[in-house]
Image (cartoon, rainbow, N blue to C red; front, side, top):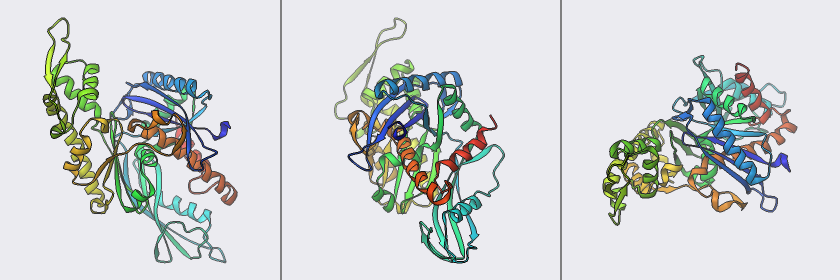
Length: 416
């Protein structure tokens, strides 16, 4: 049973969260959530590790809680990576098919993917993901799985996501210091998309906006494939800082105020009741109202959404997003965020809640803050299945095989 269990570790700027799950025997394609561990995190800035000791402590706490809740000993995890150092671009490659019967095999696809990686990168950056957009066989485009077809020339258009080597190494180091192995490292907006988007949305075109604590992650999908990714270094923590500075209160009070009374959209406020804040150091209490608080929160949320709108425009897919925008992450829980996003982005907006479970801690996990953690688990289970298939077909070297991912990861972490 243990080899069926997957653990996702979302190391965020404000929280570290571990999700333990296993495939549900009775409901194929669904998962059972066995345990959730959560601890506050203050060793990261804008998604990048800035204090190793604090991060290790947060990871250990979250893992301990998840182990206690699930009764499972955690030895390896799939971990997320974000931060505004993440960059993405399109690339293409071409290979010739030299077999006598011209049949395309998994090895040919693997060779082609390797060919697309031959791009000039600065020495401090490495490729995290290569996502095939489409394959072209003998000039015929629009092919998504060329294995088994006949052809003499195969091209591929791919989406390459790169990150700073040191940022990835620091995450790896923190997890290992906490006494756990890393199975794989996954871009966080890609992971979140597994948890909150369904195939129909990905087909007609959708943008996923994950508003976290330190970073806002964007992923644009169309025709079932990821077309553009971006990580924006402005998110929920900035909103808390604005409240803290605006009212001269402590960070914890500002965070509580944002969660309990915060609104991101003025017309959404129904009753403008006063909020009493305790004074600092024996000073008299301060009284503010919800509208005043909204005047502090709304401009910052507008800024996040405007930067996201610019990124969507830059992707060239703003006219293709029939399903609009799906908001997730803790920042989407501020009341009125969806209404504000509709105004700023001019598209349909919904809040994305993780789905795909049939049993276990369903009520606890159905919360946008767990979108990345759930997505990491889904990614691991999905690619584990694929690696089992490709191991028989192509000696474990299929395009998504865990073995090839691990070999790739090991090469960069041998430099530690």
